[in-house]
Length: 257
Image 1 (tube, helix red, strand yellow):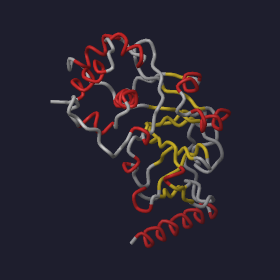
Image 2 (image 1 turned 180 degrees about the vertical axis):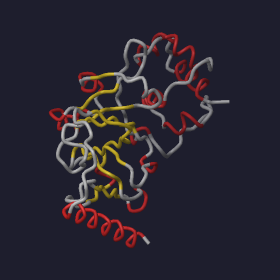
Image 3 (image 1 turned 60 degrees about the vertical axis):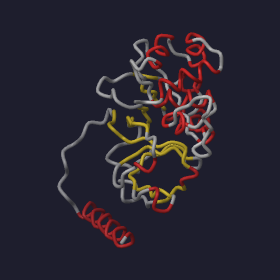
């Protein structure tokens, strides 16, 4: 049996709030509070984080501990260390896919956790992306060819950065580099750094420190007005680029062994 329903009810009453008052504090419907407390529905993880922050307890304790008058708060995973994700929903309570266009990339570094900023971003909904939280990012430059500058990457929010998989593509939001779309070259837990690799072999890989990363989004699809062309016959230039990429891959494998 989950501790969440009883914990919500206990903490709400401890603050002297009715279900309606608590719903107003969270910005949700009163019926949802009743459904959560009576185990008729489960709150999404982002709402769980919001509730934990509201009651000033850790998300770990809120989910796993049975909270009552005798409960003593834990000392790890405090809510002050949580990465807070702001989202918006449509009239049917479906999460929107907010679009971060090129002109908004710089502002996103400051507003990514601000609900008011996120609410002002262009948004849309795609029925094939139902499970999870998604955001769309317009990319620039030619480092990820054949995806051209102006392509919109649709990506899913990554809560646990240790889940990032090598050789797959992600949108990385970092303090120094802003919004970039790259292929991952290693696990974050290996050295607390992520190696970012361009699909265009002209660009050298580089590393970003874990402490400088703000958000990670896993690429799930893309939107582009550039339709794919037939694969050209190999020429000397393309063969040279392929050989260079193979040499880098072999070097990476050797360095990791």
